[in-house]
Length: 337
Image (cartoon, rainbow, N blue to C red):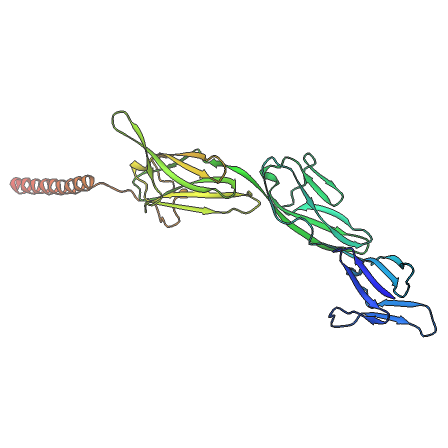
């Protein structure tokens, strides 16, 4: 007698025992036992303990018949909480506008129920997302469909394992910026401006300033990437704020009159057209401390050298005028006496 098992979890076939000789497959603790009584025609195969991987078709085959193949196959149900199999969909990337099907393969008895969720707790849209059995169909995906998806398997025995995968949607970059930022020039303070840059793959970001010169106010750009006067920072906000986005901040150190004007941010991503945003930096009469760099301790007016010299001369002449008045008063007093 030969015992064999066709496992359903991976589709593999195993010979478990021949007569009373058990093949343990290098298991540290034997859990199979083949029994045949001396005066009996009964053959038994004992599983102790039964494993969830034993779920499948168990076959008993007679090997000493030369006439025909004699065997008996029975379906072996293993009552267990479900487990999600490795054959389920793994991390995947698609283009915006495409459709995709996510598959969750789970094993367990009774047959498990499958539930799909999005990890950011956003409800799955009923418009272009539809679940059929263990499959989740997404039609004409958008960038909002990007994120972590979870497959939860459960049955009457309990909740089993869960499966997570990341769906990444490739889309062209776009930018949201402040329209204007105001700061007082020549106050020894900085100013920063911010833009949210969206796109996947993550776009490359650059900044430039537009200036004009000459009688015709001809426009020209200034590359600010290698200047110590500018500080460019990029951070990834929390998923509750946005997904597939970068917060780009440009800080202008010690704002001067020549720094006022238009600033442009450019985002480029492989395979997509570039995107551009614009912010205007305008001058204010008072210092805007709340948008300065964290190292700024206060707003202090910068005076030119000419103004400083005039101030010194003004103090000098005022002092001499007062001295002259006191001298005249003292002279008249003695003359009268």
